[in-house]
Structure formats: C-alpha cells, structure tokens
Image 1 (cartoon, rainbow, N blue to C red):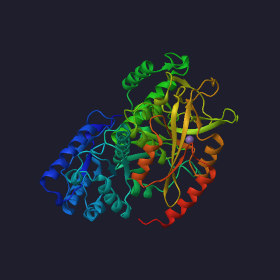
Image 2 (cartoon, rainbow, N blue to C red):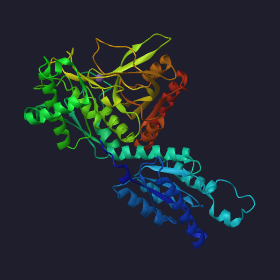
Image 3 (cartoon, helix red, strand yellow):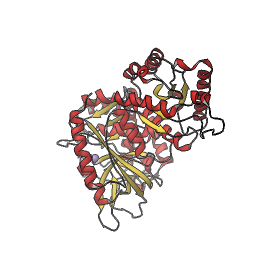
Image 4 (spheres, protein in one colour):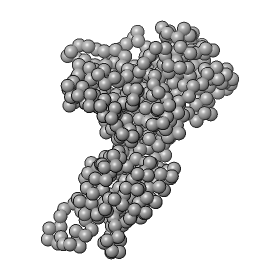
Length: 501
Ligand code: MN
C-alpha cells in the first residue's frame, strides 16, 4: 500500500476584506505564508498545505472554493480570519463547498505586545473576533467542520490539523472507490447487510457483486512459475509448519493457497478495487476458503471483511489510509470470545482465518487446519499473536435512516497464553471504561461483531472522519456511562428523524 500524502493538497484560505488597505493586506499574506511554511516544514501534517491569495470579497471566495471543489489533488480547505472578514461574503462560497472544511482559530502573535499595542496592531490582528464572525455563518449554514483552536506553532494545534488531513485523505480515497463482493451477505445476518445505494450516495464508493466463477477462472489459469515465486516469498517471510514444508503432507494445500492469492490479487488489481468481501456460503469451484491470501492482501492495504460484509471493508480501507505511515496497524477484527473473569475481563479478537498480519507481534507461522464450516479442503492461514497498546474498535452500521459509526477505546494487552487447539491469529483487549459498561453500551449502540481494530488511530481520527462523512458518531470511552449513552442514542434518534438535508 502506498498513499502519496505529499501529492495531496489542503488549500489555506485566509479571509479579509478591502477595508484595510494594501499595507495591511500585504502583512496578512506574509503572515499567512509564515504559518503555512511552518506547517509544511517537518510537522506531522502529511499533506501539502497550499497558500491561496487572500480572499477579500464574495467573488474571490466563491471562485477559490469552486476551484478547490474541482481540483483533484485538493482534499480539503483550511480557513482562518487574520483580520475581520464580514461573513455574508462567505455565504455563496460556503454553500458551494464540496470539500472537507477545517476552521483554524489561531492568532499570529502569542502574547499581547502590552507596551506597543496600538490601533495599527489591532487593524491586523483580529482573529479573536474575525473567526467568531466566520464561525457564526458556518454554524448558521449548518456546514460540518473541524474547529482547531490554538497558536499555530503549538504541537497540539499541528497534531489536530494532521489528524484532520488524514481523515480528509481517507474521504478522498472513498470517492469513486470500488469494493468487490464475492457472493451475497451470509444468509440471515442483519448487521453486515445494508443499503448499498444509500452508501454510494453518501460515501462515494460502490459495492458490486462478482460471480465466484470469475475468480475461479483466474485461479485455474495461474501459472506454476508464479506459484513457485510466491512460495519463495512465503518461505522468506514466515515460519512454516513442518506439514507445509517441501514434501510435507500439506504442501499441496499451500500450493493451492498460493494459486488463490495470485488469482485474487490479479482480480483486484485488474478491477482497481480497494477492498472486497467473500462468503464461505459461496465458494463453488474453490478448493479452500481464502485464508493466507486475504491476510496478505489486507496487509497490502485492501479493505476486507468476511461473510459478505461490505461496510467493514470500506472502513478498514479508510482506517488504513488514515494510518498510513503511522506506527501500529488497522485491521479487520471480530469479537471472538470473552475472558469473563471480573478481575481480568477481556475480549479475544480474531476471525476464523482472516486476521491481518500487520497486527503481528511475532513472526507469523503458516499452518493448515480443518475449518468447521464451508465444506471445503483445509485452508492455509497465518497464525500469530497480535501487538498490544492503546487501541480502538470501530464499527460502521446501517440504522435504516442513517449510517452510524461506533467507536470503543480499548487497551490492547499482550497474548501470553498458548492456544494450541485454536490455530488462528489473535489479539486481546480490555475495553474502556470497563468490560460491563463497554459491552452493554456497544450493544445498545447496535455495533457489529465485525470491526476495525486500530493501534494507529485514536478516537479523534474517526470523529473527524465521521464529521466529513456525515456519519452519526457514538464513542464509548473512559467517560461512558450507560445512562449517558442511552440518552445520546435517544436524542440522536430524534435528531436524525428531524434532520434537514
Ligand atoms: Mn465474521
């Protein structure tokens, strides 16, 4: 996976008006450039912040925003009112805005220059009231935006902006993205299903189905030379169980798994897909349920979830884009089973095969074991223990009249026990605020058993992303109580029923 963040642009629009005269406007432009240079100079902000000429009237604002809309590289705009910019001038432009918006509420100076401050200074340095005037019209127009308050040199300010740029990049990645679905939703499952037309309308990505036979055709045509090369990669990258080593009893299964990976990868590359889902109920013509193939494709940046779940792959992909280049990992996950001891409660997270090896704390091991479902040959999978650390679980669900994003802050803990009879990759976490509250709150919120588990991202990334995507956002963290989240869910129900579009 390679996201070229430096190629992505965020346009920086400083608002002003004609009232101040050339000298002040020159200073506004100069100061703006100093701030932008600071942001572009070795900060966590991964994208290119682009200076745009100071906007002074309704026409300039409108034209700049319309250009931002049509610029393919522009993923969002940052606005700042160094001076006062009467906000009725912004109405036409803001109504046309189609890109994510961040309002930076900063001030050029840190301290009040007590002994020298005069009306010339005040003519220039007006963000304390200028940003309030601008903020009013954004609120009145009901336009979602992130507001970041703080001096522009502060790490805290830069970090808030960096997070938002990553959320905006994930949003751009969704626009026009294609997700492939082999087979339909697992029969009778509710939470993994949903309205794909609404999703495409709201989120910009499409989900379409492909017959498993098309994939089988590619797998059948894989040449043995390519298989040999991929087996070399497996041998270099992972430990191999004796049974899959050369002349081992399961070697043929590994060869078949390599063929599946090559065929699947070819399908996804040729179709320019960003993710996919499959179903163990629809594998006609395949010898195994894809295990290691899916695991390695997820590690390469493809979104995925099992059982025909098409929403989670999209969220996995978005989280991988947001977290690109950051430590940790973002991966498809399932709440598998609990350690329910009240003194040591935790969730074991895994899936029957498809756990993303970017989570691995140790070197994954290739193993072949029977699978209770699917009625196919024993599938090949990578087995490993997952990393630990502060993490989140996130779930995207369809509530019928809107999509909801549920996030639970958790603490990933090291896997210290061997699980000799459960040969799947696994992670362990302790949900916040505590197991009882978190699990109840999650279930009240209608969150799925399929999630994105991320050690790279914090709640703020998902919150920024939810705001951009127009998602209802529910967070379960150390402050959560059941009565508070139940109330929030009730209020939201009313809000989304009455919401104007
Ligand atoms: Mn599942």
